[in-house]
Image 1 (cartoon, rainbow, N blue to C red):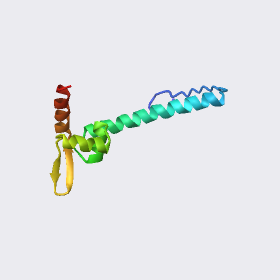
Image 2: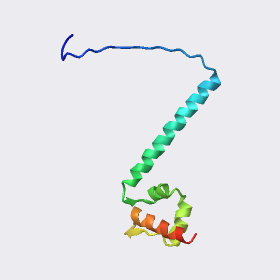
Image 3: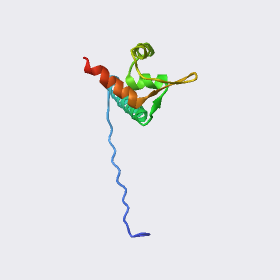
Image 4: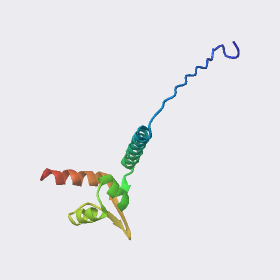
Length: 104
């Protein structure tokens, strides 16, 4: 034994698989789907750490199109305008959405 007194041991296992093109495509598509879902999840979680959104971020957060967001703004969706800059407060958006669902 050398160094710190720990024994390091390397173990290797090898396996070979024979897969059809269809099976390879299925595995590739599933891996792609899993990665895409994780990326979308991380992106959504990142939005939860932001207090004020730009319009595009607001659309992603609310999962709506620009046109739908414009309609919601006309219906009273809260926004903050400073000069030519428009921002949306995530907390106020959540309150507004909860208020809208009461009447459903």
